[in-house]
Image 1: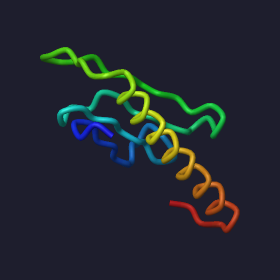
Image 2 (image 1 turned 120 degrees about the horizontal axis):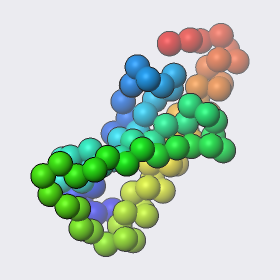
Image 3 (image 1 turned 30 degrees about the horizontal axis):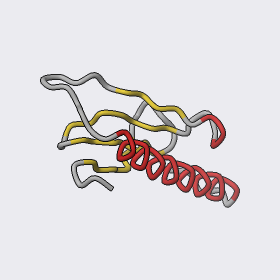
Image 4 (image 1 turned 180 degrees about the vertical axis):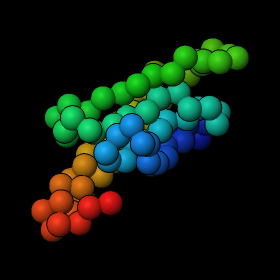
Length: 88
């Protein structure tokens, strides 16, 4: 993965589960959430503030896939925890 991209899990009061933030050069460019379910994962893309982002599309696709995989894993863990009666 392009080292300028980072992926970070975080909580967001607007969503029940975790949110996965994608950053490029330390600026968050997108957030992925699974609030509507594993089959309906959504991405919110943020506009650049002071610069435009230019990077190879293959690098971006790879980071999106890694973030999506992490979102699916978190969603499955949340489902299992709810079955066990664990709420956060």
